[in-house]
Amino acid sequence: GNSVTQMEGPVTLSEEAFLTINCTYTATGYPSLFWYVQYPGEGLQLLLKATKADDKGSNKGFEATYRKETTSFHLEKGSVQVSDSAVYFCALSDYGQNFVFGPGTRLSVLP
Amino acid sequence: EPEVTQTPSHQVTQMGQEVILRCVPISNHLYFYWYRQILGQKVEFLVSFYNNEISEKSEIFDDQFSVERPDGSNFTLKIRSTKLEDSAMYFCASSEGSMAGGKETQYFGPGTRLLVL
Image 1 (tube, chains in turn purple, red):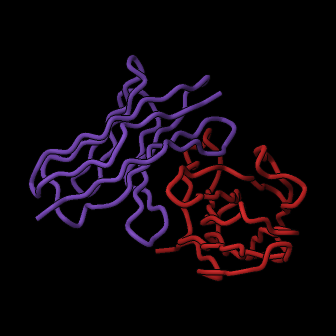
Image 2 (cartoon, each protein chain N blue to C red):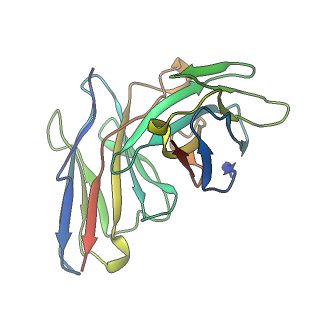
Image 3 (cartoon, rainbow over the protein chains, first blue to last red):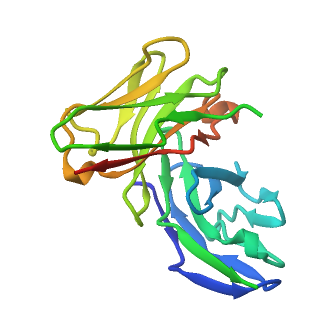
């Protein structure tokens, strides 16, 4: 079945540091890939998405590129802020419609 | 901007009691979903719903769970006889259409935190 693997957290960075959160997936078809973010005490918010190979999703300074050859969708940001502290979930959506989420990576950004 | 809403935000119930979690999906969306997240764990799919019927469900969605769209705006999840292990955050989501149309992005509500005592 489909699955998503994310790097283990928590990740702790200083403000303005470079962020990478790795995500790899296994899917039988050609899924769409997503990053969702969950701020403390809140629900899931769509951060960015990519629907086909080599697409780059971007939002709020975050980027991720759909790499079919490495089945990856790593999340990056050049300069993190304290306000980026949250849990980040990589997810895929295949023809079956329901999403498959990774386990989440908790990011803490220190001032 | 349209958003998915859920009520209540928190619910505490006794084991064995029935609970109904309510969701109002985005108005032009056709696909509806329920997910749950046990504290500190991953988000797990429960069920998807389209055209007034369940289109897919996971192993978690056993006979004690049911979903309904009682009117044109609400989408509910009922847990018939709650167990301690049902304590979790329950998220409702909706999407406009199918992946084929590129409209499969799911928009999530803020969640209902259910605590079963």
